[in-house]
Image (cartoon, rainbow, N blue to C red; front, top):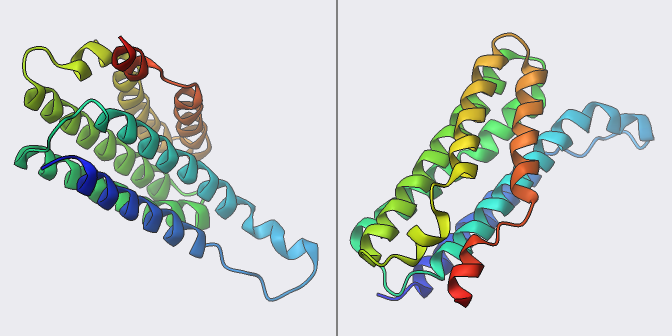
Length: 191
C-alpha cells in the first residue's frame, strides 16, 4: 500500500485531537474580561499541546515522504503513535485545570514520553522497511534532538514531583526546541 491512506488517516486523527483539546476550554458565563483570568492556565496548556501536536504532524508528514510503501509493522507503529497522541487532550485538560498539582504535570510528561517513544518505534519501522539504503536513516542520523527531547521529558516528570511549574517550563522548552525548523529530511530528499 502507498502512504496516502495512512497519511490521510493520521491527519484526520490529529485534527480531531486538536478539536477535542479546544473544546476543553469552557466559555465563561460572565461577560466581564476578568472571567477569562481563571482560563489562562487552561489556555496555556492548550497552546503547549497545540504546538506539540503540530510538531508531530509536521515531522510525521516529512517522515512519510521518505517512504514509498507501507508495511504491516509500519501501520501498527503509526497506530501506536496516534494512540499516545490521542491521550494528549486528556493530559492537557487535567494539567490545565490543575496547573499547580504534581500528578497532572507528571501524567502530561508520561504521555509525552510514550508519544516520543512510539514515534521512535515508527521511525525505526520505516527505516527497516526502507532497507540498508534508508533515506530516513541518513536524514535522522543519531537523532540527538529526539533523544534530548525524551531525556528532557523524563527530567520534567521527575521535576514535577518538586515543582509542576518547572516541569511545565521544561515541556515548553522542548516544544521551543522543535519549533526551530528541522530540515534533515528535506536535505536528504533533495539530494
